[in-house]
Image 1 (cartoon, rainbow, N blue to C red):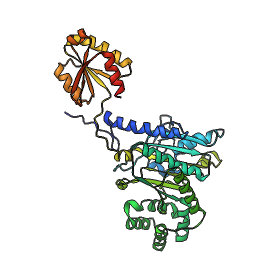
Image 2: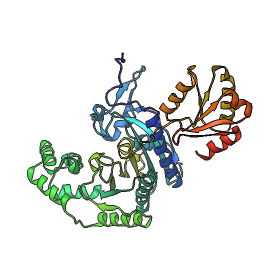
Image 3: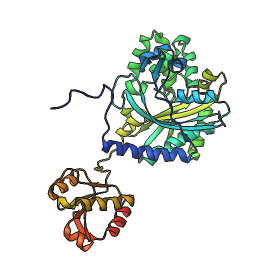
Image 4: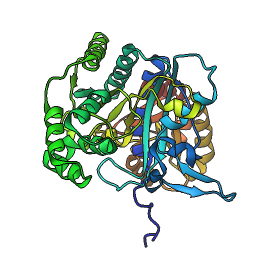
Length: 413
């Protein structure tokens, strides 16, 4: 009989195999972030609703998990780490600039679940606060590049743009000021839903047809003039100097979030473009000023872990234990525990039988959980001081002293 209780819609359980895969990704990304001098921060799972709605407006309540606590305070679950990090910076102007923070955390958004999109999701990223220079934006691209390379993704590319360029297109096309963000949200889906669907969406926002046509022509154009394009070329050149050579300028990239003010980018894994961007971000020079009254330049990015995991294939069987110790007879259980304690003291992960199984069943269990080695302990082995070590993959075994077994297991880690 199965339980009637299931995960809430848009959430999942992660069992040890998947968690090991995710932890490996997190550790590699964390190492890259810290190599660039970013320090880890962790913010509360819930924040004051006024903080969360300051930029997005009260309508954000329809898109997030908002609630009142027992004292009647209105709160919301964290859905974007950039906002609470801005709160930290706004509350302490004495922090030395540039501020370099990173996070690896789960978040919640009341979204329609789909491929790579969940109501509880994980994100990791960095925020570089205090610098308005293109070198800061180039570093952001470089950190993403090194992070994806570190976890074994070989073929991916960046699309970069500036929100100011798209804002100039909005004006040239004659789109009304009040429809500006509607146009941004629609054009942000161009590669996902195609031009005809974007036209339909913009029409539903009551944007004039002539303006829609002109706007799409400008976005699809390969050329634009002005200092914003020159700035993108500078960022591209600086990033290339740090080894990033897979960047192209694309005027349709705007990012759907309203707080971006200039440079923006998205990252796509080749053969997985249908998933959408796995890492996105850009410059948000006015957001901190909303909370502090002091405008502070800032840039950053977030890696969508759930989409990223879709691109990483790992068929290896996972076992947290390195070795399973098998007792030939139940009365040898105390001896097995002493051996297990000695191996654990050497830093080796060990499992022992906790079910009272016979030797055959213990071997079957060890094989089922994917443990790479077993040690067989019998009276003969205890008398000789040489235990049987069996390699479960190669199906080979040999008699060794416990110190030799410990040395071999540590060397094979």
